[in-house]
Image 1 (cartoon, rainbow, N blue to C red):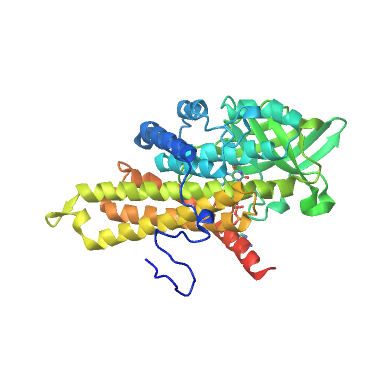
Image 2 (tube, helix red, strand yellow):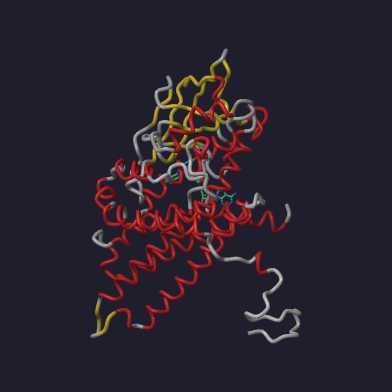
Length: 403
Ligand SMILES: Cc1cc2nc3c(=O)[nH]c(=O)nc-3n(C[C@H](O)[C@H](O)[C@H](O)COP(=O)(O)OP(=O)(O)OC[C@H]3O[C@@H](n4cnc5c(N)ncnc54)[C@H](O)[C@@H]3O)c2cc1C
């Protein structure tokens, strides 16, 4: 307890609350706890080892993703007026963490659907487009994809080359998008294309495309390092015909919209990192109690106990950064800087925790029988997707240096 009359001029202790106690509240609300628990129970019952066969077969788990829809997890941020759950970002981050703790392939599927495609429409589309596209997305009848990255542009997203030209009442798109999550399984996609080449980033617009529109298709799913049960492929536009009304917001606003979508997306990617890191430590702790060496369990070796303690501490830091960024978003405050910090730290902890968890397993960590092998492969994506670690450092440094 801090003594009365200290240099901060506060009494401290339980008897007198510090003046700013209400602003520093770490309690989740009952509703936030409830949704987190539902997500945790679902992940424990339906993900984890049940996903391993899908991962091995590189197969998209349609039945499991359909259950996410039944639980309302495919319309988390969507207003109830459009069929969603209308939850806050803190609740969303908690759900994303728990699902990724269960399995990151399912986690990234849900993230791209909610954070990117659905949220782009919810934030920027006209009421008519929202009425048309949000209810089936929010209720999980249709999956969503979001295309910004191209074969020639990722970090430098404003250099994208997909063209959209207005011909009568139809936009005609030509080009392609690379590395798109849910590309072959999505019924709806939001894509950014260049409408005014001379205007650089202000010449980019966003469009809603539907599976089956003439000239619009997806490529063959990539074979990936990890996230084998998620779907990632190219989106291809060959004179793709998009109704004029499917322009999202104003012409030329697509890039600015995309950057705002990424702000929320990075918070969810931070939650993905926290979930993966937690899964790694869960698995390592389980193994340490079972495995014996030199007549003792691994859990009795101080070197390994220290490793687990350090990881648990760093995961808690990542979780706090993630929740703070989500809270800022819920308060309507600028969150770009906080989201970049949370995403950077959480993704690097995910990779570190996965690496240490494999180490704690020894040889067992290197074979597919144990979950840490999959967690290790999956973790890497969090340092790449939604802006690499280098790009997050660029965003953070820019704010600090004011340039
Ligand atoms: C599994 C998976 C799913 C994905 N899902 C989607 C999706 O749904 N939608 C979507 O639009 N995209 C998606 N992406 C794409 C992802 O966002 C990009 O891969 C990422 O932004 C990096 O872009 P890039 O691959 O073109 O790398 P590059 O931009 O070519 O970067 C290569 C390297 O150079 C570094 N670098 C680049 N610029 C700088 C700089 N200025 N300073 C310092 N270093 C720099 C990068 O950090 C990286 O290390 C996905 C990617 C993967 C792998």
